[in-house]
Image 1 (spheres, rainbow, N blue to C red):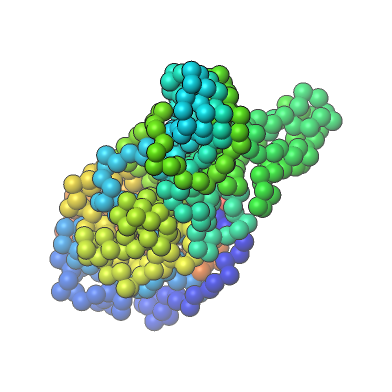
Image 2 (cartoon, rainbow, N blue to C red; image 1 turned 30 degrees about the vertical axis):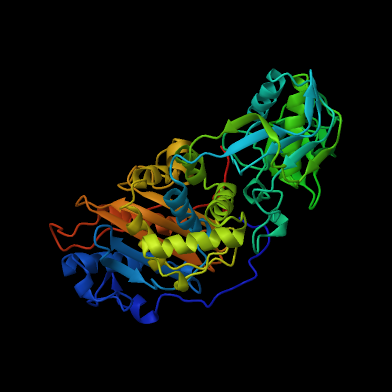
Length: 535
C-alpha cells in the first residue's frame, strides 16, 4: 500500500533447514512439526493432522518467504483445539486484520442498530425569513454522508422558513478531537482515499463511503493541445484543481496522473492523454475534511434559497442553547458494516474507534477509543491484551503488532455474540465476484473448495500481508485460521494464503486413505501489492 519503503524491519524467521530436508512429496515424514502444539490438543486422527501439517509446511517452504516472517495458526472453531501452528505467538504487522478487533468491539458496545446523527441548529431570533444569529452544522462521525444528505438537511432548513442567515456557518466537529491522522501513518499517502483525515464532520463521493474524499476524473479534450477536462464529484469549491495536463493526438501515450499536494487542497492534474482515450479517475482525500463538509452544506443551502452572510467557521462547539432546525440519521451500523468490511474501509474503522472513545469514555480520541477496545477485548473476548499492541483502528499504523493467537481468540469468541451473523456476513467471501459480497476476496480462490466458503479479513501493507477468518472443512466442521507474512521482498504472496485456505477447505479428520493432501495450484499475483482497489 505505501509508496514509501517500510523502514522498520523485524527479525527474519524462515523455515528451519532441518524441516525442509525432510519434506517428501509435500508430507513431513517426522511425526510432528517442532512448532506444533502438543498432540493431546488435537482432536483429529494423527495421520490426518500429519498430512495437514506436511502440506502447509510445503506451502510455507516457498522461497519468497526466505528471510521473511511467517506466523500461521489453525484451530477448530468450537473448542479452539490447535490443528496447525507455526509461530502462533509471534507478533507481526497485521495490516487490516486489526479491523477484526475494532469491528467486533464496536458491534459489541454500540450495537448493530447504532446510527450517527448530523444536526443543524441555530442561535439568535428568527424574524420572518431572517435568522439573526449563527447556523450550526454538528456532526457525530457519520462516515456515510453524501452531498444528497447535506442537500436534504438544507431543504429542511428552507422548509423551516429561513431564507437569510445573518451570521456565520459554524461546522461543529467537536464530537471528536482535532487529531486527523493516526500514529505512524505515512505522510506521502495522505492524499489517498484509504488514508484520509478523521473528523466528526465529513463527506464521501459515492456509496463506497470513503469519508473525506472527492472523486476527481480527467477526460481527454476533443482536440489535441487542450488540457484534459476535469470533473469533481461532488462539486465543491473546497479544492483547487491545478490542471497541467495536455491532450495529445489519438494514439499518443497516456501518462495522466492525479494527486493532491501535501498539506494543501491543490489537486494537480499532470501528464498527457490522447484524443479518444479513456478517462483517469482518482478518489482523492481532502485536507481538513470539516471544511469540505461545510462547503457542501453551504452550497446546498444556497441551492434551496438560503443565504448565509457570514463566514464558515470550523471547529467550534454548538452552544447548549441552540435550537434544532434539522437532523439526519445514518444507516444502521449493521448496514455500514457491508462497505466497511467488504472493502476494508480504513476511515470507517478510525471513526468507530473515536466513536467508542466518545460514547464509552466521553472523549472522541484515538487514545480513549483504543483503551475502550482493549477493555472490551479483555472482558468480553478473553484476549490477553498484554500480548499485543493496537495503535489505530484500521491497521494503517506500523506500530500495530498482533499474533495469530490473539486473532483466532477473537474469531472464536465472536461466534457466541448475538450480532455474530451480521459480522460474519459482512466479512469478504472468497471467490464471490459480487463486489459487495466477495469484497477484497472477490478475485481470490475462485472455482475452488474455498470459494463461497472462506469468510475472511484481508490485510495489505508494503512487506506485510494477512488473511484470517473462517472456513468449513470437508467434514462440515468450522475452522478458524490466521496467516500473517511480514518482511518479504517480493510482491505480496497472497497465493500462499489462498493455498492454505483451500487445503483447509478440503481437510478431513476422517480421510478414506492416508495419502498426502494435494497442494492446490494458485496463480502467483502479478498486480499491485494493494488491498484497496476500485472497480
